Length: 108
Length: 112
Image (cartoon, rainbow over all chains, first blue to last red; front, side, top):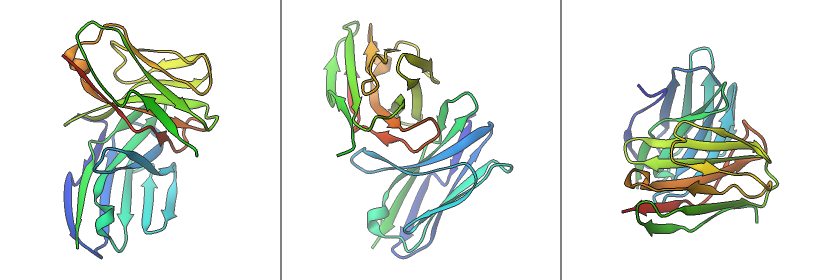
């Protein structure tokens, strides 16, 4: 069993829809990282958070450490948001454990 | 421009031929890490370094070596590559452990 689970694995949305990607983890973590991987393979960091909520543009990330759950929301989705979104937990042993990613396609 | 560079970007080699993938960052970051990405398995951490001369194993360190002699460089060494090390490799850095990471462009390695 993977220490970090993401859902859904695949997601198709119409442009403008509100999108939620979920990440749950079974190990104790000190922080959680949300990443975006473009179709060409490059990886960009979106958020690193250890509590509460962070917002950047149309992206919002929340985490509930006690419930071992984090969500990434995209408001007013756009075709350029099409990518794979990956969450990663930083455990107390300073190691990162990754989910297998959510592949998002936003249709115009 | 702040960046993490990796070389080579693509490499095809044969079993047992030692190779080094270089990683360099120009942001004076303390933390650097290597990951491999495989279909169905996602990203997995190989080794990481908290600072110069400080390295530690990640989730899948077998078959790999690293060194951190200078703050900016963190090479990944495969002493005797095997076909199961065929993968896409990423180097990343952050100012400190627990901060957002900057990723390199990736190195696609094929071992035949």
